[in-house]
Image (cartoon, rainbow, N blue to C red; front, side):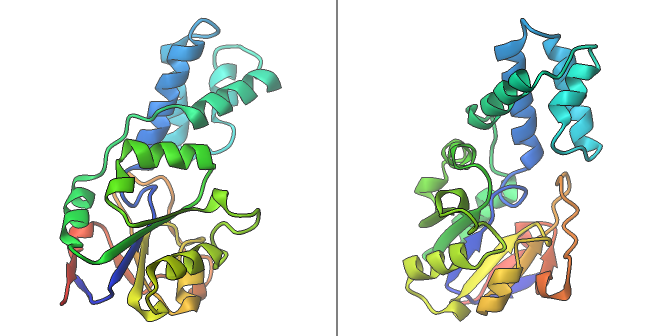
Length: 224
């Protein structure tokens, strides 16, 4: 159990508040419905899901099409990627995330998340976060080059909260990019390593390492 005294609780979204694999499977099913006349939809979903859990990234659709003896034509792949990113996801907050957002009480809350803006915005809507989190920064809405680990999105949160840097905590999953900037800015950092996450979360340098590690948001308590 760790105690937080910080007054601004800032969160990542993917594999922090919900399981990113759930979004992926939701997207695979959406493609099955939309493109099922062009390939075996259920097998496509099965193969994409298997590739996801085997750690494949970036060529999942190619592999699924090739498994059916189909050519992964660039135009089709582009259509699949676009539809996947823009679909309305069937996702929900993890149970401990629901409890955590209630327990933050009257503290300010924030969200900093990477990924295509249209995709991350659809996740925010599906999880109903705009009514539950005060300050939301989608890094893809910033000028190019300001995604994590750049400090710009965290500085945006500081401007929105009006609180000093030391009053912020960032809770996220990915040690490769999530904690470098907030560590540098003097924030407190907490890494959550959920069961079912799709990234290993290993920090690339000591500067990328979070100050605390948890496996559930239930491990956090608040001091007054």
